Image (cartoon, rainbow, N blue to C red; front, side):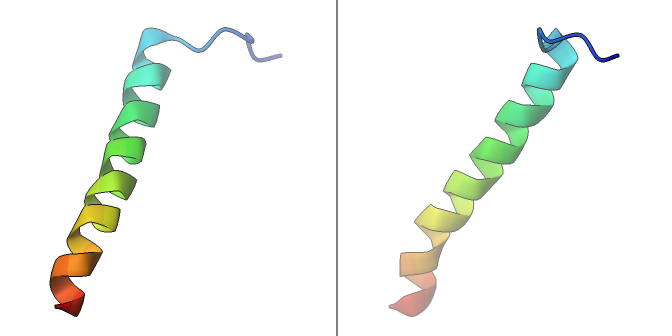
Length: 33
């Protein structure tokens, strides 16, 4: 059974993916212009 509280490593990974998504959102308008 997985522990409910996310470990520090897990949180770091999740933040990384979230940052990547935001980067894509920011890059999209520049590609369109």
